[in-house]
Image (cartoon, rainbow, N blue to C red; front, side):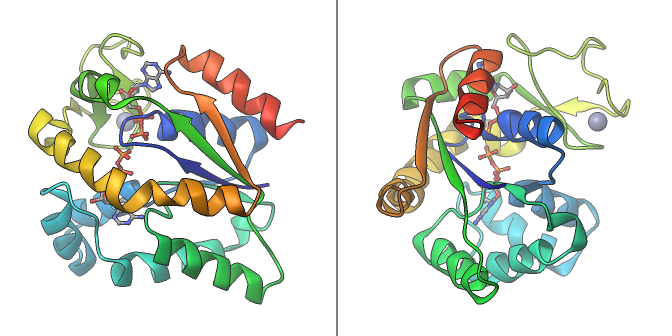
Length: 214
Ligand code: ADP
Ligand code: ADP
Ligand code: ZN
């Protein structure tokens, strides 16, 4: 089971990816999480990525593609995986397809979590992210039972710098320009499935499960 989660920033890709990962026992691979871990650890990659992320821009493909392709060759990926936030550009998608083709593999599904722009800015301003483990919450739709403390690891929850409205607008325009073309790309491959991401998160998950078990 090899799945790509597509959708605007804040559409609910990460939320659904975690639910799929736990139900089907496959790894959840989030490029955003990988970059944030590198920033936290002060690596060279983290320093470079941060310059782009803070501005709401995409990290260049040269810094992104090899990282993901290497990750996919690890043992825990042998039964499949869920890619969350990758690919985000046509060249990334082509590089992924190329790397898989070499092993005689291909992606099974690209699930497009569809949420209109109007809903995104309010949703993002309510997102809270854990500085320790990367868990995400929402102040209204999915609050932590411990207030601004993570239920999973006990660290503090924050509003991500790039989730503030100014940066969210920039990220949305980057999404429409660079990532939305992937919807056509995967439609042409015959693997695109769209779910209505404005529903309650459990209803979105029911729609996703229906697709995966069809
Ligand atoms: P969201 O969950 O809101 O969609 P992510 O955590 O996936 O955001 O990504 C945060 C930021 O990390 C992006 O705005 C971008 O700067 C960078 N990033 C993540 N994935 C990629 C990628 N595949 N290509 C380029 N940049 C990426
Ligand atoms: P993405 O990974 O696409 O950027 P997230 O999964 O982090 O999106 O979700 C963005 C925010 O919206 C989070 O605060 C999350 O808790 C919340 N959220 C996710 N799915 C839904 C939903 N179906 N309805 C309402 N809020 C949601
Ligand atoms: Zn945590």
